[in-house]
Length: 127
Figure 1 (cartoon, rainbow, N blue to C red):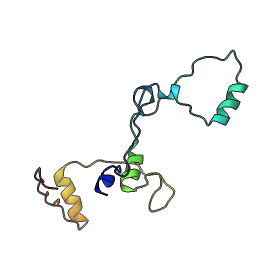
Figure 2 (tube, rainbow, N blue to C red):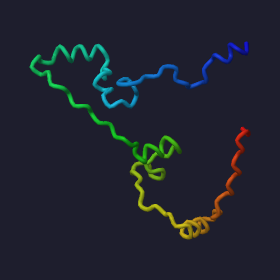
Figure 3 (cartoon, helix red, strand yellow):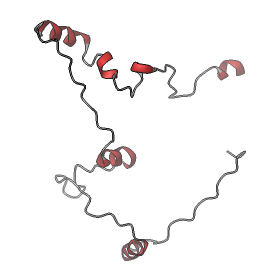
Figure 4 (cartoon, one colour):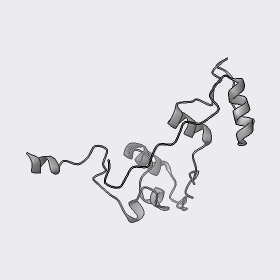
């Protein structure tokens, strides 16, 4: 049983890896991998005229995810709707980075202005 259990992969571990053009972030992957379901692709190819054999330009995806989408993914904060009225879109009006200003705001709100103490780093052999 122990040898059998050792051969079972960990959860969420990808067992198939692609390299070259088929790699997930390859620049030319959209040119090789079909983007439409096969039935739609066949209908579209029959409808296209033979004279239109130009190479399509690859749609460039944005390199970064927007801050609103990151906040939604990590903290489950929806920046597209206001939590108070439910209709307006939220936007950043300021980023406060100065420690005295942050402490003053937190004290005014009745919160502890001191951050929690840092935990000790684990030793190499410790899990």
